[in-house]
Image (tube, rainbow, N blue to C red; front, side):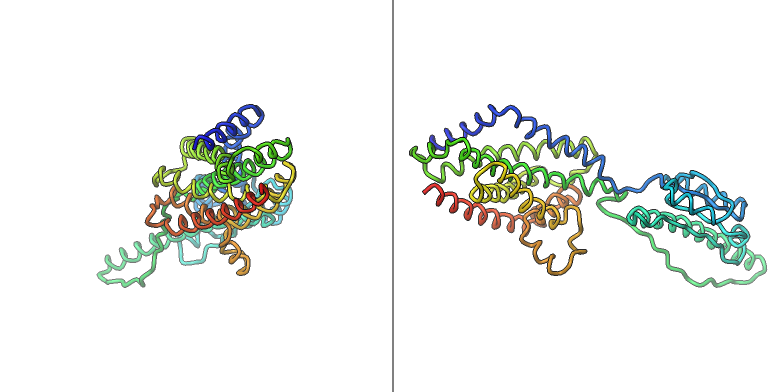
Length: 383
């Protein structure tokens, strides 16, 4: 154990001497989280809207007020005819157009069919779909209120005439969203940054840390010393595991106190399961170090053959359910897939180990296997 402790101390001293790495290890993750948290935001608010009002009544003005007061739309201009919409959408000055048909107010108050059209710029499908959903909900709400008001008037008239009026039943859908009531995309993406930072930092640091010994020529000196292979492996990987643990504290603090992402589960559980994930990334980093000779090769190999596929196929950004069936089977071999379920379960759902034990078990098995294979290859290179 004394030999192992000396190796660990050597690695920490070596990291301290490389002063340029300290900001990269501890400052860059926080900056990345801040930039990612503010930049990657799919919440649709204050969508530029152009109005075409053929009715010009109190009812049409009330409908426009509901759009603008919702916070989802912002009136940027008006047109007399629907033909003028095109220039607003082509130039990008507006993303949505609201066209209120003639006779809208009379139809809403009577028995006619109110005519309202929402035109959206589909060149960017994601915000267009969300904006159409918001607009449809507002128009449907106005229509439902009008129908309820007219039904109440009919019942009152029938009661005044001594008659009983039976109205057909209707089904009212009352949606409820749990765990993220306001559907904030930031709550979905910010915890994912924790997985990305841990994956990038621990994989690269472990891969480059071993290869650096080869480049500067100290690996041969280490081999001739009375150090066992397991002591060298554990001694070199342990500091990077500690760095990963520190990053869990940093990123979680920024996510909770900086962006208001709720941490409904146990922080100790998050730390413990994060260590299982770090076991996987350290194993991958050590495996990469046995395949390359220079730090540049280690960085390129880790980035393009390990990290990018893991980001794309993990479900952190792109839903796994939307992938082809053959690709979905491949995702079961991606450790980040299971860690993504863990971090979102702990942060948003408040899940405990009784729910997350399958993911924890898979991460433990995969991490042990990866580390064992990498250690065997590393030991073979030492021999």
